[in-house]
Image (cartoon, rainbow, N blue to C red; front, side, top):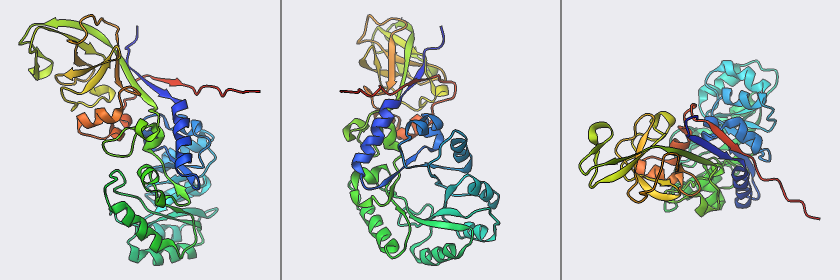
Length: 366
């Protein structure tokens, strides 16, 4: 028998979440963000499943080429732009649309000799203060791109830095700044990420850029995907590989970080930080054993973790264990571990086998 840990990917849920995006932003084109190996779900698999998306967003040239070589024909945007001028011929050849956020990139475009012009996104810093031109630099940089023979269409682009917090006033302020800057200029416009398009409809311009929500995860702090009408795409599941009884006072795991408060059964689960489960998940982090909620005890080790079986005295080797999925949102595990759901799904190790669940066939009625 092989090690029982599996990551299951539900392609039907992925398609459902794309349709939910369409419902939330019916007048915008959808740029499905599939960077970081599709947020750990398999980049090519995700893009092929989301064939109804209007375009895709990736972090870098290598990711974009992988999509093109897999047959993806929709527009592909490079969300971090290009890092050196040597990338520009490939960007032109593969018909990619890089984000331009520094004057250095504009100089490289002006000096390049390309077989055909490239479309670009001109990124404006409206308040996140990470990448992008200041509002004062926007118009002169736009004019330079407009005059550059190597540049075709120019899109106008910014990124929301506070859209995970519905109480923040910063998203509305960023939207107002973006409007004020770009309204007098031609070009497709894009501002909304998952949080923006679900929480602030006014941030929905020509293109929206859903990422996390496509994978069934809420972009809002303290919220879960199903509460937003989303379906979790990834399930991480394993089994009990041992069930042991220990006396009161027995120390469990490395450094004896947890001590049995009474005579009790302890289960050992085949999953650990070597698989991408967070090492810093503390005692009390929930898991489901046989569909019933219990908790991790002691430290997560590389290949295993221990769980409290006091509520399941009849648990046996081979019983199913759910680490996260539809019945146990990954957002909840992230909160216990002091991180965000992005990190957990992106961190699944390559050694974890992936099982893909295809979408159910459409019912045809006469």
